[in-house]
Image (cartoon, rainbow, N blue to C red; front, side, top):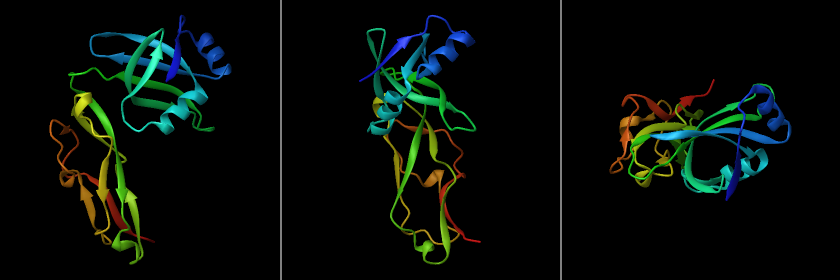
Length: 178
C-alpha cells in the first residue's frame, strides 16, 4: 500500500524542499471532508499507479487508509516529470464525476486500407458511485473502416453509471493516413 505524509506547511519553499527530496505533492479532497495536503515518494506513487488494476486504490496517510481516485495531475512541460496530483476520495454511496479510460481491442479493417486508428477521447466523464465504476470502457474496433468512428452514444450502457459527455462526440475512429 502507498504511504504518504501530511504536509504541515503548504508554502512554496516547503513544496520545493519536498520535491528536492523526491516527493510528489498531492491534495486529497472529497464531498464534506476537509482537504488533506500530503506528499508521496514519487517513485513509489508512479509504481503503484502503473500496477493498479482498478480505478479506485487505497493510500495510507497519517495512519488512516483512504480509497482514492486520480482526478487530475500536472506535468512539467520540459521534463514530463509529474509535479502535482489531485486525488478525490471515493466515498461509498456518494455519486461523483469520474473519468473512465477507454481501451480499444482488435485490429481495424481500415488499417489495411491505409487508415490510422485515432483516439479522440482517452477518458470518458461519468457520474456514478465508486462501487458501480467500471475499470475501463473496452471497445471492439475490429469492424471500423476508414472514416468510421465509435461515438459516445455507441458506448455500452452500464447500470447506475451516467455518461456526462455529449452523445455526438467521437471516442475512437479510423482516419485516412496522409
